[in-house]
Figure 1: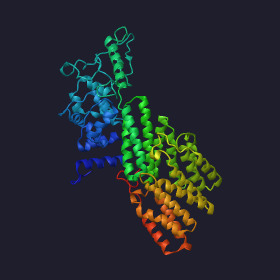
Figure 2: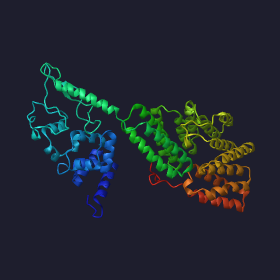
Figure 3: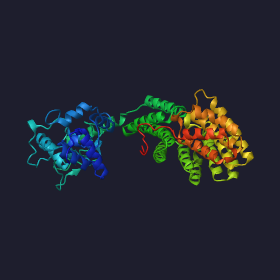
Length: 536
């Protein structure tokens, strides 16, 4: 392909990588093409095939191998060798291959220049995966007569009676750190003429067990870290009720990446369980904000991941919140039967805190949309007796505000129609507005939803002056950054109704309709990481 002189080398590499990804090529194929086209050494080509900078590779390496302390400078030194820099050990190459993933092997990370500088034993391990044996012609040869430190190869092999070596089931492969023991692969045990493992082999095996114990005792988190992360979850949950969704999205995405990186590391099992619980809460909140910004497919993907994390952790209360996110998506997409099924699956988990209040409130709105007034009455009666006291696991949006319950009761009554239900809708919406308005921090989206529901109910009663009274504060004070999908949905519905109400034609109605049209055209902007059409 002819090169554009205006393009940088990095831009050209990125273009080739993305084009080959579009063709469905593997990372290995991309690395080979980058190496050929840009004259890159294998370790560099693989890194560029993944689009990683040296600092990012160092971070991924250290996360994948707890206890390792590889810096971006050390990555650079290993990539430069043998034309400078520092020689990488075979343990480093094995761990590097595991970090890169996508089927990468240590042998794919070296070229002829590397092999020329290695000892015969090292070359044998890289090219065959087996240690060099005493019978091999090149066995005595190694630089300065000894293997390089840290390589740990087997340089002799005896066979038991019958001539067959004993397979221990361990050899070079992905492990716990650059100089740590490697488990889970194959190797040959050195034995004497009687077939008994030699003393050095027994000592080595015991030392490996001791190293495993030390590795197992290490952890990348402790109780203090988890305590801080739990506090951070609470802060994020309260912030989601107050801050613009685009701002909250960025915070949640960073928090999710942090907890995922920790899970990918090494910790004690009870700490892993807590990390999965935190991951379920953060990813569930990320799902809700993603939906608020208009990306329902991505939101459902986050919700499914959150559900998986909740299952792994055994933490069931957050499942009701996750199901409510999925229910909201189905509800606003008018898939009411699916929304009802999702709430039914959450019923066994609604046993603590405000979970039952959340579930019954949503069931009321869904059954109203399905035109099942008897079910609406039943679940609203149950909602009025549901507990309202939050548990410690229900800060912010993870718990259910009584104002939200009142808001959904208003929507349920409005959907059923008729003067009695419209009166009830007005009463419940006023209750919701009162409860949201007394909060220390303004709950902008909840207040806007309450006023929109009041405007809907008053319009149904033909009280146009009251409609204007509740619309004016929303249109005047609700900044575009708070105009989520549910808020825009309410505005669009009200605008349609105003257009249809020719019996209420007036200058006031025309003004309200025009103001609503302008409001709808400016929804909440997505953050840079979530542009329209991208499912993060």
